[in-house]
Length: 635
Image (cartoon, rainbow, N blue to C red):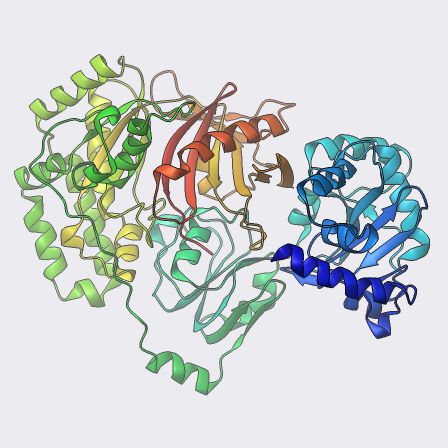
């Protein structure tokens, strides 16, 4: 079917081309120059927050072709169908692909981009193009008389092209990087949508633990927060990555979410008022809501979210190793542990998971009952103030967590768990991780709701860490999130995953989809920071962000990390902050990105739900470890 369609287009285009180069006002397939903005509008298209055009330069004749990207999706369509008039065969495509090597046999294949958020123009090449400095300079010279925007900057998209950029910069060409564009943008859209609600401007210096929101608030955050309770919309003055917990929350809730560095200056006068809020790829609208919009908000009946939880087996007491755990064991060990167990027991070559074991739901339930805390939970949830008084509920949750952490842990249980740490895990520092039955689920990933203790050393620290993780089941943010999705708190239990700790060189998150380009069906989004991974998902500093295409090893750089701090193991147990050593600029080299993506690609078939995967990883030296995998919930 594709060959037939291409043949028909080729016949039509041959007739068009016979009349000579097309003029913009007759909208032919291609033109030899773009003399003005009107012509540019005809031959370009808008993708997200960018206007994109493409051109081709014939290496032998130096002819330039600006083709209609609304008619031809990729360069190859135009080259094969119009310039070469060839069928779409494997041999012809193989020959065409030689134009991405350093020595170009026939064509230079160029992109032209207008970045609408920052109003900057540049030219670039596919991130897998091995173009050399001489050809970059040649493209720039050929564009000068043919394109209405002058002084175009060269934008390198890959690490290899960044090396080329250093050369061409010495020759006088202006360079602009994706990192500069990302950080220069005043506005960043993370989740499109519209909402009506009361604007809440959070004062600078407000402690994260004291922030309380109503489900219908639209919040303006002047500082970065590691997490947030359910709201109707989010506007932040500091923004980092689509994979931060706050941004993942917004995607799961389906609410408008954006960053605007001047939001307080623009919208602070609306604090406390009912507002209309809309986010598109390039714009933010925040204004006083009309009476009709307010009335519609008040009378609207929201469709309830209901997430089905795996039932909890409270009888099983066995501390199963990941090598003996499968996805079906979610009813005993929770989703985090059972997902990792599924990967480990699948025995996929080349996939590395730190060894660990699960502490079943039974022990959380026993701790609550032995210390009569289950009755306190029932009384709290049954009190009429639970649903009507947020301040009371916050106080009650704080008291409950304190009681769970201070209540004595059963010594026999602690001895048995510590024995397993010493015998099965070698007595090294371990991560004590949450693994409830209300996280990592299709439609509800619960990222960051519950807590982890890292580098736990010794029996006393282990007992403290177990109670800390159990208590996190009643974090305010976790309770609010479960309520927003209609989850019954009485059906929620906490298991624990005890895992060998990896003192990571770097860590981050990989999602098996391109979060920046919804039309890209092959690429992965990868975020990274030096040291342990908590600072990636907290979103308080910009991480390194790349897009990696495993089908052709293409690496596109979105941003480099600006975080000067890394988290490392403390020799006495726990985590400490250190300065990132000077000279450590690039985490995700092309070699590392390929190695990680290849590893993830191997176990994707283990999960059969069909959604993209959200994978947490750590790097130790040059070796990767997988520490979490779950369905990705987001845009």
